[in-house]
Length: 164
Image (tube, rainbow, N blue to C red; front, side, top):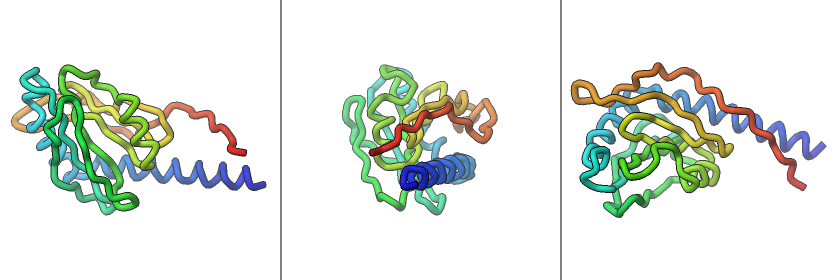
């Protein structure tokens, strides 16, 4: 019975997380901040530097300021556990555009989606450890444009391992 209850709670948390993730991504404030993030990352997208930039989105939907530690292929970010709903960060051209194992671990550890904005794509690492390409990205008229409509994201099936 405890295992069934634990499984039900885990599934409810995943469903809530997926809903919140869609809502966070589709807000005009988040999309505006993503454009600012893309603009800041342009030098790294064309190989001038290898700096990552990032911001978080509060649980209420408002994005925080963009930060960078200005370190080679690494960024430190202060998280407000329970107050942040998502992480958005960039990957420079010298790094794969997909979420790294560290990106996935951060999503799992904090229980929120961790988005990776690269020059041509937006990816996400989910709190359940899965990843998915969200959209193709282009820079048009001074802003980042998601060229593939952002649907309700469907994740790949996850096999839950019962805890003992």
